[in-house]
Image (cartoon, each protein chain N blue to C red):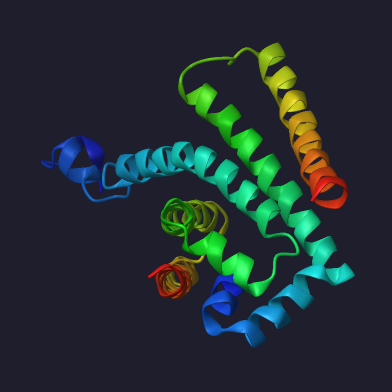
Length: 128
Length: 88
């Protein structure tokens, strides 16, 4: 379209073309989940050390403690959320084909949510 | 990690299999690699959070923090596995 003769406003020409949608929300969620992951990872690493070579009964006792179970659930939920956001950015940056990119983003999202649900169910089953 | 949690919830037999997997040399190598990746990701992530707060954006500071992140990740990984092998 000839720019100089167009009656369309510049705003109308760019509206819906990618940016100014949910990018900031995505970015902010990624930062906030990153901040939350710092203490969660420290606690989780400590749990892993405690679980090293633990018997089934010991492992059950550790995982079913309310504080540990809470951290486990938060770690899984926040961790998978952070991973979904991060992997989406990688795919958006490096997969040029739009169709494939969308399919990969959706498949990864569904896989991550399924794995998170399965993990949280397992934690609840142990803890409750 | 999800597999370990699922095994723990599935009963002693599944848990025994999970224990076997993580204590096997191949499992240990995988866990070592995963811990190194996790610590590096965490250190470099914190570096990014500082950048987002407009701290350390000069070129010398960026190089310096990059080196610090790598060294921290190596130290944390070494500390974790020292604790696992020599303390626990």
